[in-house]
Image (cartoon, rainbow, N blue to C red; front, top):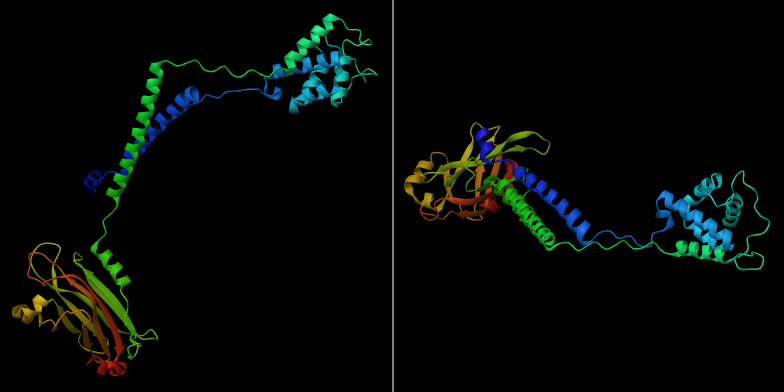
Length: 380
């Protein structure tokens, strides 16, 4: 068993190793070469909600200051909505601890403008702040300058990520070589997998091919030929190389009663070596109500025409030469069997022509003796 295992190692071992190496190389190629070099992620025009927490806080503070200077309610709402779900909590935090230069009243006015209710905060001014430069606001040049700076900060989109610096020629060459190596490794793993898969696949045996031929063979419709239907009907096939060929079948009455058995087996070969070259088969019928088993020998053309071989095999049963469509009749006290040659072919090598069978398909049909008389005239 150990020798067999060493001679036929598991096909999955080498495949698993190749797959592991391919995964590691592919991970490096995809992450470093493709992800960081050829197609890196680039951020552009990020939303205020995507900023870092401290930047979101600074953005909200500037938005409140801009509203305090301009009184533009619509712009304040747009800027506040840009913070998404973070807006209310940030505004609450800003109201609890106002930064230097920003009054609680301005924060309260901003909250009312954007529709946020802040607990414990004053109701705010009775009228919204006026834009800078109007007679009521009375703002000067400094206020206008501050407003312009805040608006510029709020309205300027987040700059696009700086394009990556150009890589050196050596780095590009290494990346290309890695890609080529990865493809070669994947191809080698695929070839190894399919080669081992083909080696591991067991060959089709002669017995398996015989079963397939038996299943493909068409049984005789005796009723269509005007004969009584048999109580048992079997099909069997021999293929050259099936040295253990020996088929037997149980014959049962329609009520399930056991009546006997029948079968076919190898009886003689020609030449030497393996596989055997079968030149004759025994077709037999056993009747539980009879004292002996009836046998006939189905022979190849060469064996049948060889007088010495025919005489030798005649001791085992009446010799019959196999021919396509040939029907052989065996009778016992209670049963009658008809063996029909459905298909046959001879082998072809250095032995005499038509001396051994390459394949042989037989149909065995059994009738009770009282029903067999109805078909006897047809057979004769």
